[in-house]
Image (tube, rainbow, N blue to C red; front, side, top):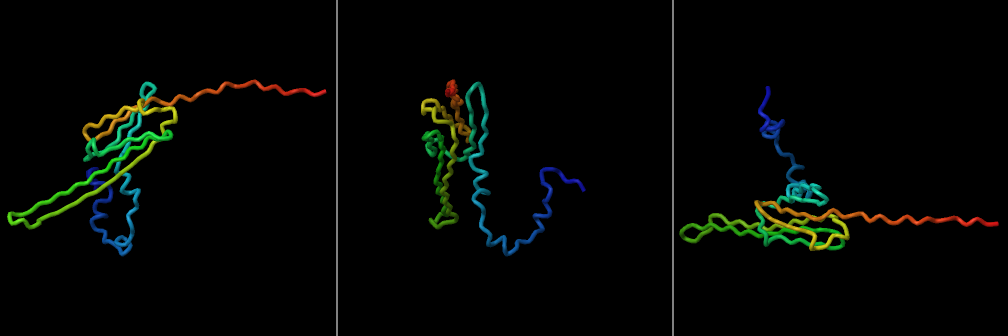
Length: 148
């Protein structure tokens, strides 16, 4: 039986699968969580690199960009506090979230802070900076002395 592609290939397998003891005690791999954060698209346009980094739910004030030793590091952190009370002041729901994510890219030691341009809109941090030029070293002609 063919199923619409929106369900995926193993919809019923996942619904009918019972958790094993291993599922309850196995730790979640940090990379599984981090893969959904800060997804980045990198393009080369007219001698510049352009990065689009997904950071939905963050504010511009929550982000820090640092250029040090040729590495561009993007850090984002946020803290949310949601409280709902009934008319007598008792808690109905209370949630807190604190998160931090960071990612670094090697951009080259010749890139300066003034070369990096950043803009944040619609949950996407857009960065652009010039492509590092590789400096060609002049080839020295070396001669071998002939004895005798």
